[in-house]
Amino acid sequence: MKYKIAQIEDIEKVLELHSKYQIDSIRQEDKKDGFITTAFTKEQMIDLITIEQGLFIAVNDEKVVAYVMSASWKFWSRWPMFAFMVEDLHNLEYLGQKLTVQNSYQYGPVCVDKEYRGSGVFEQIFDFARENMTKKFPILITFINKINTRSYEAHTKKLKLEVIKEFSYNNNNYYELVYDTSKSIFKKSK
Ligand SMILES: CC(C)(COP(=O)(O)OP(=O)(O)OC[C@H]1O[C@@H](n2cnc3c(N)ncnc32)[C@H](O)[C@@H]1OP(=O)(O)O)[C@@H](O)C(=O)NCCC(=O)NCCS
Image (cartoon, rainbow, N blue to C red; front, side, top):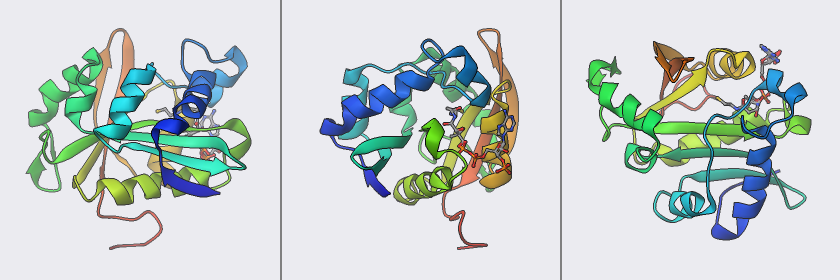
């Protein structure tokens, strides 16, 4: 398995994996093992890669089997839900700091293809993305739909992300979570 920062030529394969598990196109029977909320266009992927260097992928036999997207709030703010989260940042505190668009970024979506779940790819790709993003931001922020219990278990039990608040948006209920990007999940402390 190879972990790398995606390039433009990887976009088609990433979008293929993405559409398999995105809420609008996921198969009904797969939904219980998690789904992705946000939809993406090719143009948004190009910005994510060229402006943010924020698309991280796991490749096996030339197939993209997992991805993590991570980017500044400036990138995410084109989606109303992220703009809503930005408005609330100043009310939250973590690592002794008030959250801002300078000291934090938004991690996710993350996706691991069905055949690779539970294999450690999830932990590896999370840490690979974290290692790159810590160069720019001390604090990771993300959200998980309360009905996505698999993702919640994986992020809180395996990666030890912490719930910082709960909120509702467009009739969905979410956890908002944080993580100290200086901490590798493979070491007790830095
Ligand atoms: C969320 C995701 C990235 C996690 O990766 P993963 O490889 O499946 O994670 P793991 O299997 O290592 O860990 C999941 C844990 O939840 C548990 N679990 C499995 N199915 C579950 C379910 N339906 N409800 C609650 N917990 C569940 C597992 O038992 C496992 O814990 P364990 O290893 O201690 O038993 C992956 O499942 C995925 O891509 N899902 C589809 C897209 C998605 O939901 N993305 C996240 C959006 S916030």
